[in-house]
Amino acid sequence: MNDICRLLKIMKEKEKQLFAMATICRVDGSAYRREGARMLIMEDGSYYGTISAGCLEQDLIYQAEDVIKSLSSKTVQYDLKSEDDLSWGQNAGCDGNIEVYIEPMGWQWNKLNKNIYLWPYIEEQLNKGIALVSVKCLSSESKIENVILYSENGSISGPSIDQDIQRFISPLVNQFLKEGRKAKYIHVNELEDDFLFELYEPKDHLYVFGAGPDAEPLVRLASQVDFTVSVIDPRESRCNETFFPHADHLFVEHPGTFFTNRSIPKNSFVIVMTHNFNRDKEIVNHLLQFPPKYLGVLGPRRRTDRLVENKNALPLIHSPIGLDINAEGPDEISISVLGELIKVRNRFQKELRIQRTIECQI
Image (cartoon, rainbow, N blue to C red):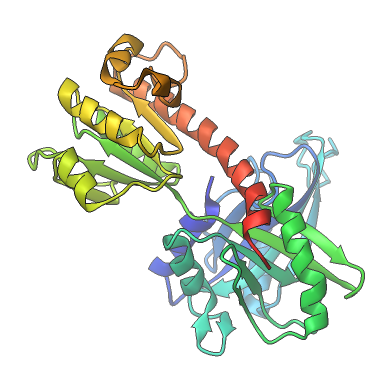
């Protein structure tokens, strides 16, 4: 799950309000969610997202109320191992300890630099497809008064810090990325401070060729699980907001026109489901020249084999698409397909985090 993109949307919609953001920064043993899971808590106690199966949220709301009133961050620990109702395990028996960092924030409250606000800047970078590593000092008395953002393109944004601090922090960013984590609590002995390292990743882009009725639940579900979704179909009567209100982009174009004006990034996901053999053939053979991260074709494998001109490229195609759950009907098939997309996405995301240690020259 890409919690940060969901929560950015909520903060932007309620830009004049203050929130508390709770982030799991350390897990010892098993827990419902892992490091990097977040939830956003409002002043009235309502919240978005979850970091447990429901056993911790009530206390987190209480803790968040104090954080919002004091405008001071805090770290809280929960023992989920205990089967004693008096403990914060709430008799959950999850066999783990988790540590949660709770911080006050607002859409335009926490500045990154003199004239740059943190969250609008993060949203801007993520929309450009740029991943960021956020480094926050958790100690109450620190030389660092704000967050530092390390971009995968090599830039650093944040308050002025001396070279010694940067010298100790920067190598830890690459080490953090190499581990493939979303968040990590790190004590830096040389600085005598605790830091929370968090990875903010852009959404993955899903291109759906075909705006038939069977694409409607697929697009809706893909949007709900943090894909940016584009639908491409030449039929204006089908490719519109009435049938695809959850799509981020609608292109009423033939595939040839679409490819003439645009290119699909290599790290994208593509599903071909136009139900037109010649159109599918045009799309598939064009994409195989520069294969995306995931290329799936709806229909039986023997049909897909007939579509492909270069038979050596067949292993690059997912066909038939979806996990084998004996799905029937558009809704079940969409769930099957999204299950496969999530599986592929999670595998590639961890590999990409490790690759960023090489590409991100800090």
